[in-house]
Length: 566
Ligand SMILES: *[C@@H]1O[C@H](CO)[C@@H](O)[C@H](O)[C@H]1NC(C)=O
Ligand SMILES: *[C@@H]1O[C@H](CO)[C@@H](O)[C@H](O)[C@H]1NC(C)=O
Ligand SMILES: *[C@@H]1O[C@H](CO)[C@@H](O)[C@H](O)[C@H]1NC(C)=O
Ligand SMILES: *[C@@H]1O[C@H](CO)[C@@H](O)[C@H](O)[C@H]1NC(C)=O
Ligand SMILES: *[C@@H]1O[C@H](CO)[C@@H](O)[C@H](O)[C@H]1NC(C)=O
Ligand SMILES: *[C@@H]1O[C@H](CO)[C@@H](O)[C@H](O)[C@H]1NC(C)=O
Ligand SMILES: *[C@@H]1O[C@H](CO)[C@@H](O)[C@H](O)[C@H]1NC(C)=O
Ligand SMILES: *[C@@H]1O[C@H](CO)[C@@H](O)[C@H](O)[C@H]1NC(C)=O
Ligand SMILES: *[C@@H]1O[C@H](CO)[C@@H](O)[C@H](O)[C@H]1NC(C)=O
Image (cartoon, rainbow, N blue to C red; front, side, top):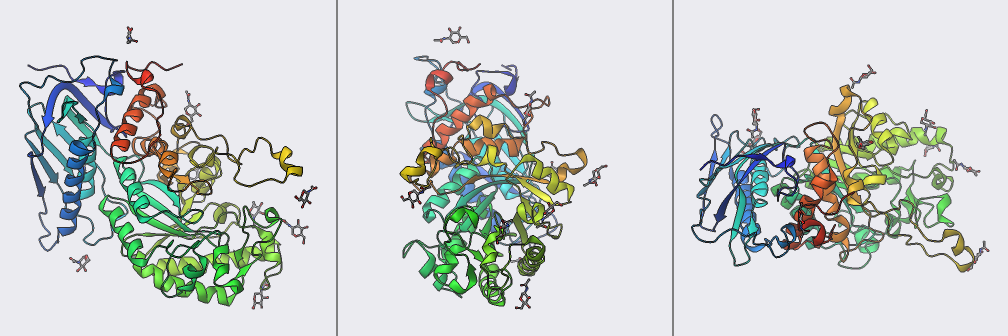
């Protein structure tokens, strides 16, 4: 019997299962069960290139299949929160129809043959699951197939008597991302995170098809990065012995990310945000821990690399010569920072002794030219914070990606200057905001800071995250310069205990905007009412996979369609 196929997005109340929503998604209401014996075949159409070693692809596919099975059979959930109270929503267990086979068809050989992914990998895929159970996923890359499998795993639910089923067959999906850069920024300087915390974050990112891990690895407060050529940096600058990342750990994190389709951009923020270098090299840092801090920096401890110092350049060269060859095996990017440089820090800089931008600007240009030259010599693409372009007016190559954070307008200004922009307006995508102050105030001044809101409060509710359209104010002829965006999790008040609930599921709201676009098929803003139960469901999947994501609604809201709306 052939049942009518419904377009899921038009059908409120239906459990639609997928996050982010595919470009095109049709589903039905037939039941299919799945068991661990299902046949999986990987077919690589590598017509011309027989010398191509496909072991990297096979590794990606094998781990994707393993993850898919783990997710469906061991880390799944019973969806009582998404079905009417005490209703009999689970499928009949007699006469089960099963998924018979899963064919993974890769149409073109891998665009790269090494461990390092091509940044412009084709992430598109198609998924077909007829009611007869022969599943076919096609893609042009192993990562595309891996995404198809991720989508596939989200179609299945756990039965309360055991086993896994979908009620959505037949399924037809054609999917591709709207934006190429879909990132999350993790700050491991303000607080330290273990390798396991980072790997868990990469897993969660991949589950919502994010593909850039912006690793803000050092900052003013601590230097956890081990640099063998300069071991004193971390022995003196880490918070405590052991709270460091070894070269092997950095490589393992980057490699693991690549296996999930996630490219890591390591950031060493400079010339500001470098005070932790002072613990090993006080001669390179100006204005260390000056008070009151707010005349010389954005937060304590102040400190900036000296701006006209040959010692600073020798130091940076030594660090880059050690670091860049190692990271360029796994990534195409290095982020040289450049946010919140406070001119007054250079009044005390014995190589400059000035806070006049007319004097500082050419020095900053020389600094950036030098740093970016080293980055490019190692085959890497530089990323900078927007201030380098929009406040310091530096001239930079068009290859440079600009991390915008201050406004939507700064994205428009960046693309108007011909640069590619990464969106991330702090009013929407700073997920650390709204926790209140972390500074303490003396009794005589505390009243004037009451009730101790932080600079970027309120907390960014997922709806606010979801409301950011990366293309806001971007002229038609420049939309291609909006590479995508990133959510940010600055770690003054985030550590491994609360990271997951700060990040998830709100980061996934941005991930859907970046994968699916901010507008629906009819060109309207995506509906919170449609998205909310899907995001709640995605949250249950994250929790089932060991990610401590916070709830966004009570079951009352999701148990009978959408009962909580205005
Ligand atoms: C990878 O590709 C490059 C250039 O296309 C080639 O020089 C190299 O030998 C290849 N490596 C392997 C392991 O196939
Ligand atoms: C693969 O590449 C072809 C040719 O560029 C394109 O038409 C297709 O949409 C891509 N994606 C998939 C999933 O086949
Ligand atoms: C920078 O340093 C050089 C040599 O150390 C010096 O000659 C020059 O005046 C300095 N520039 C500024 C703007 O202080
Ligand atoms: C530069 O320093 C002088 C004091 O030496 C100060 O009055 C002025 O406000 C500073 N300029 C900026 C832009 O902060
Ligand atoms: C950059 O240009 C803007 C606008 O012309 C100007 O206000 C600003 O002072 C310039 N910044 C520097 C560091 O020269
Ligand atoms: C407030 O009290 C602190 C000591 O707790 C003192 O150092 C500071 O000068 C006082 N500030 C004002 C504005 O009175
Ligand atoms: C759609 O969302 C944008 C923000 O991205 C907002 O400015 C605009 O007002 C919304 N449009 C409607 C019709 O609500
Ligand atoms: C887009 O169009 C504007 C106005 O016609 C023009 O100034 C600008 O250079 C164009 N931008 C690109 C990237 O083509
Ligand atoms: C569930 O929703 C339907 C309409 O969508 C309504 O008629 C029904 O009363 C609701 N049931 C409960 C238990 O709230």
